[in-house]
Structures are given as C-alpha cells and as structure tokens.
Image 1 (cartoon, rainbow, N blue to C red):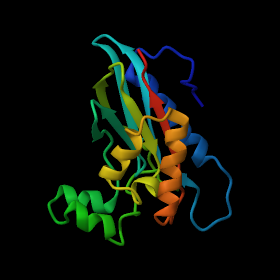
Image 2 (cartoon, helix red, strand yellow):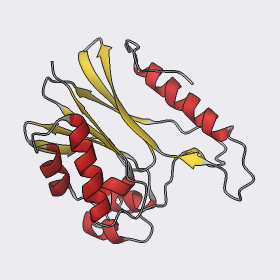
Image 3 (tube, rainbow, N blue to C red):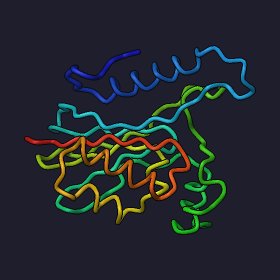
Amino acid sequence: MLPLAGSRITDRADVVAAVLAAGEAVAAIPSQAANPPGATIAGAVLADLPEGRTWIVFNVGDSRVYLLRDDLLSQLSHDHSQVQELVDAGRLTRAEAHVDLRRNVVTRALGAGLAQPAYPELHLVEARAGDRILVCSDGLSDELDDDALATVLDSGLGAQRTAEVAVAAALEAGGHDNVTALVVDLLK
C-alpha cells in the first residue's frame, strides 16, 4: 500500500498509485467464497498542485464525496453503478434511481475478481478555507437525500460529531447497508 496520510501530495499520480495499490491488496485477499472480495472507495486528498491548493477527489464504485461550501452542498464524485449509467443516459430520473432495485450494482470496484485494475475517477476542486468535505458509503447517501445531508453538515457541530450525527440519522432512516461517514474541515 502507498500511504498518503502525512505525505505532501504534489501530483495526482500519487493518488492513482495509492488506489491501484489498494486494489491489488483487496485482490490478494484469500477467499473460498463464490464471489471474490471487493470494495468501493472514495476520498479527498488536499494537494499542493501547480495551480494551487486543490482537493483531489477520487472514487471507485458508489461511495461518495460531497463538498459543503458557502452553505451549498455539491456531490463531487460520480457513482460507478448501473443506475447512474441509466441516469446519465436519460433512462432514469434521480428520483427513480433512488428506489431502483439495481442501485447497488456497481460497475467498478477494487478486487471483486475483475481482470483489470480499477482506476479511480478523479475530480480536481480548488480548496478554500471553510470547506467541509463528507466522504461516505452508499449506506449513508442512500438513506439521506441532499437536503438532509446539507442540514446535518451545516449544523454547526465539529467534524467528528457531524459524522456521528449523519451515521445516526442514516441508521434511523433504515440503514440497510454499511453506513460510514468521515467529515473533514479545511480551517485555513
């Protein structure tokens, strides 16, 4: 594995290499199960790129990254799932996708017996003081719509407490899947 924590990141290739290494590690997990181990991943790395301080947002699968900036919530990642492909093609609305039975069928994952490495999708976003980043599993984003997420993220609580409240709200709303949340505040 290539650790990013504590490192000064100056190139998006460092993030890609770390995700590919994680994919190799997942693929190397021994298993006798019918379906080989697999995982989705998402995150945001604060990098010093030539264009300035930048969030390098990455994901593989249907875990998500959101940004709360100036009281506006934006989804920065793009799901790799069957329903997202149908939404992109105009064959499903976002509301229909939210209840579609195929919503948890991912089209890209780490490991999972796939023959090729899962390259992460990257998005570069200028980093600004006051940014609040949410990285979450689909178990959270499936249970809380954008309005509910924005309300929780903009509640004035610290990052750790906000993540705890988001997880509790998703579990209370049904919590059918793994519910994970990480909240990061960029202070300066």
